[in-house]
Image (cartoon, rainbow, N blue to C red; front, side):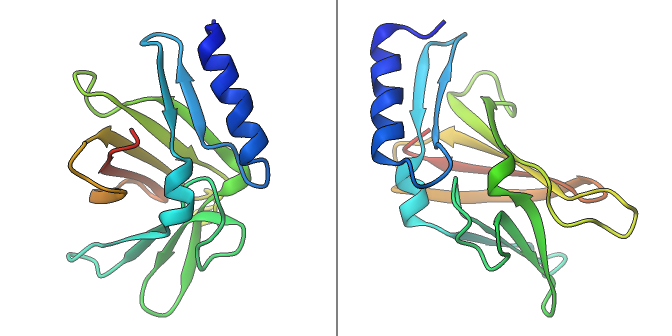
Amino acid sequence: MINANAAVLLLLSFAVYGGMSSCVYYNDETHNFYDLTPLSAAGPFTYTDNSTGFVFEVSFCASDTSCEGQSVCQFDGSTEYGCGATSAQAFSPYLEDITKNGVSVSYFNGQQCSNGVTRKTSINVACDATVQDFTFDMVTEVSPCNYVASGRSVYA
């Protein structure tokens, strides 16, 4: 259950940032409040996979990527692939390492792959006070068209 202070912060965030997907999350288990809204204005953020040459572009809680309506976009040099719609965003507790503080943001309903699966991306954002906005650590394709990214931010 959300305590009174968290509820007020959530309501204020919705009032101020009502024009985009909500970028706030309250973790009931840890009682931590996360507001990634500053990352919406600072992005999109890019990551280049040196082994494949793919470039990933992420715009937290907004569809400011090159793929229309998508918060996550992948480029292969000639084609863009939507890897997660802004309208299908979900927050959850940090999934990568339970000993770290942070939050996970997942995006579903990306572009359909040749195997019939729609692309999706989960981004694990660890708290790091030394990172001004957001920095990628890695992006992995854990199964066909299912991507998991790791990064760090002061806002997590």
